Amino acid sequence: MNTQNLIHSIIQRIATGPELSKNIETEEVEVAMSAILSGEIDEVQSAIFLIALRMKRETMDENIGILKALLRFTDSQKTTVNDLVDLGDPYSGYNRSIPISTFLPPLLAELGLPTVIHGLDSVSPKYGLTHRHINQALGMNVDLSVNESKARIEDSEIGWSYVDQNQYCKPLHDLVPLRNKVVK
Image (cartoon, rainbow, N blue to C red; front, side):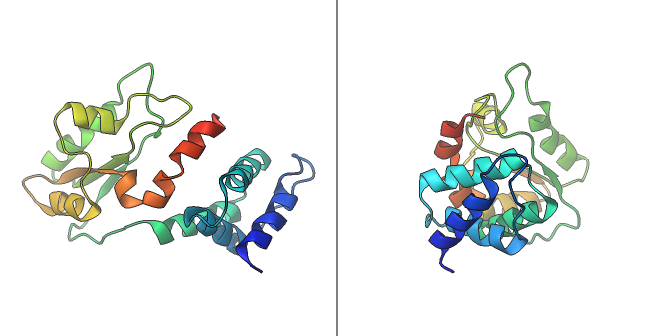
């Protein structure tokens, strides 16, 4: 089955309301999400798929399929550090407070715990203050490649890095405008 037929079939099954929607197989979700990330599926069908999946409440198998697709498009690196703390707060940021976790990576690195923190510039629904905003305001390069971030993490004098979604998963980052149109 080609991806257009598959996404059509999936939308027919998941966009029928909370009582009538059907769960879909891990493999189907993985193929559909991969097609969305590679730009094979148009914006309207992509939005319907993502909203309908969320509205029906994703199953663990569906979440696994999404994750498998995302991992396929993610630039992941193996590091030489034994342990790595991975910090990821809500990417939509904070409106009522400062995300203090932005300040944890240098502290943890100083204590011998290499740390990576990740995020993006801004996304709905909050369009709040993000790790990128704070690190940028502090004069840091927030557009390091994944390789450059890896080098900072492995450097015992630094031991931490911020990596932007635009660098580690550009196809997902390219969906931010769609996410902003979806609102919720």
